[in-house]
Length: 359
Image (tube, rainbow, N blue to C red):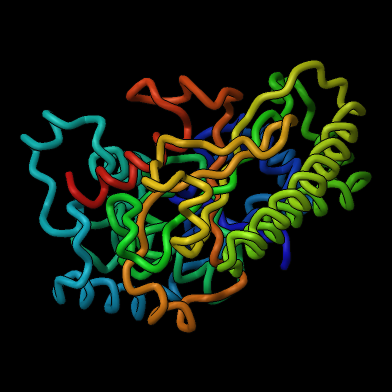
């Protein structure tokens, strides 16, 4: 599996601290840039991009017409039952629900130009432009074997819904054969990362390529092992081996960061993947509780549940690809107090998905 990622949902990078962090990990970071559009990147971003490995443009123009037709056909079919996809967003709704996933996404996309300046290549109603961007990014990632990478929980929520073909349910349920799980790692990034010069980031990328790749590959490999497991006894063996491997790769990666004079660490990185319900009952408890976060290693790795997956057995052959994983990175370091509802990080992700589907 490669370490190539597609950034979404905006053209310009919205969070520079996040971008510096992504540059420490992925070999190449692509983004969707319409042909003829010049991203408004400041000098420090241009310096980080000078080797041609960060911010690589993918022109959507050759993909957009066919993908837009598919998107509109699916909207009209009623197959997708997520609330933001069932009607337009009224001005009154936006005023009342400024924190809702659909409102945040719409405002984010349009603020960055995708719904206005670049409207000619969207080919979809403006009300659905933000969600089309998620659908478009997912389609481009699948066709090019790229990992999905975002700094926005609402964007991650929408893209994950499309990644599993709308088969994501609002919460884990034992009547489904599979559930959507997450593997989370914390404290793997420098707290003061923006103080590191672009030139030093680029030097680090070259010198510690093996450590970067091992850390990412470790998460991907164990996510696949967990996804393929259906026996609780074998799961215990997987968790023990995963603990050793992730701890070792995380320790090596953190050690390599010492060359950047890093003092403290922060950051949360999550990777989502399907697991059998029998396995999910171990991860989230017998009640499949998404507020439960199973701490796997003392260095900072955990497993949790996000949502249910309906009809996964029927869709598995169609959807199983190397790029089945979607990543979300937050520049915070605690399991608890990370977001709303006073619950832990995993519960926050679950609530984001539930809101997207129901509210």
